[in-house]
Length: 153
Image (cartoon, rainbow, N blue to C red; front, top):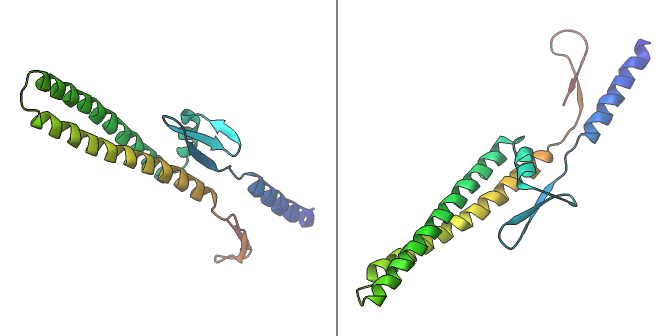
């Protein structure tokens, strides 16, 4: 009985480890935002976030991405405000230098945050996928404390 139990336990552990691998996530640019796929199946952002929660580093990049996204939207609103101010000053034949500088500055910084947003999203997906590639090799080693063998993952 003992002779068949150990090989069966080893085969069961080997079988479970090879079948427990997750699927990679890919992202493709859409019109307004990215589209996320897990193999061939499209997933929502909520499902992606639940997948990223298993990897702390990927989740950290995702949170940075959300922060950069919110900052870019705030700067877009500021740019619209500066543009309205510039148009109002131009209608009243006043100097439009200040509002023009505001439009250009908010555009530049907002564009930078939008690019950083996409970069952080890509890093989050890459870190998640790299976490899936960890080898699941078994090592059978002699025990260091006493008699027996150690199954190391």
